[in-house]
Image (tube, rainbow, N blue to C red):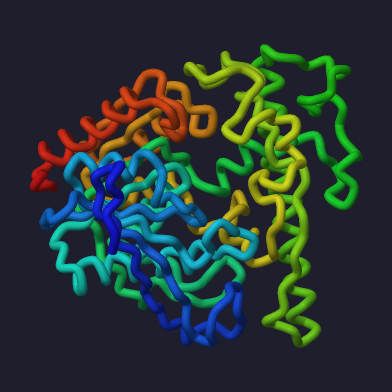
Length: 392
């Protein structure tokens, strides 16, 4: 344990060892049948609380991000827990990430003694939190989309007590599809394109602001491309199994995954974001750069986290099947999770104990935005008090 003097936070890093006896192959580094999870407990020095806010992102290392640290500085106890896939979603399986979240929650309650757990669903952690909570309340998943373990119906996931959806998107699969470059016609040769769907082609007759007809055509082509990749993945897996190689994998590259019309046309899903920009920089450069969504993946991972039809983790469907009181915060200048993400999640929640708040001018990460960050923390704190979910 050490104290971060500059921020007034007591930070306790710790490890959890999760046994994984069900898997017949490895998709992360580590010992056979075991997975190591890393976590940071953040809290004001010497404080006690019955409530902890647990953040987990499928790949995110967010223990030093502004929002979790600011919540701790404001008096909350916060755990930022890594999944087994830190900073690398190449082979990520969402069903296994749900088990990682379950281990963190179990440890927080049984070892650390917290009575209440609030799920802090920031960015991609939002749909993960919804997926987890649905499977905790009404488990439906018996295997991954590839037919592999784990069986979440047998996992006895511990339900949380409240949900914070903070600059969250609707799901990895749906978001990727909405960002896919619809112009690519040949996955083995991404230079083969439909010029009328190429957003970054100055010769394309369809230029921003885009017509409603073009937007509909483009999105239909995005879904069709996702489905073509999914069909190829399922065929490849079937071929491996027919060859007597059921545990084999195949890695591949997905080109052109950062071509969302919202980044070039601010009239689509309007907010205060900068034009011709995205959260990773110039979208035309990122579209084929190494850090674009889903750039490198595997057969099983594609089906679990990126497939429009096959992924079990769908924030909109999961939101309709969970009962937690929920606060949703939409950041007014977010260039990753634009306003429709929060609205769709809000509308998908079937119960009435939900609240949607916009933080004007806030970007996705709150970097350099002290006032906006303070407003977000105050909003979370007051809502938790109103719900009787915090002693802060």
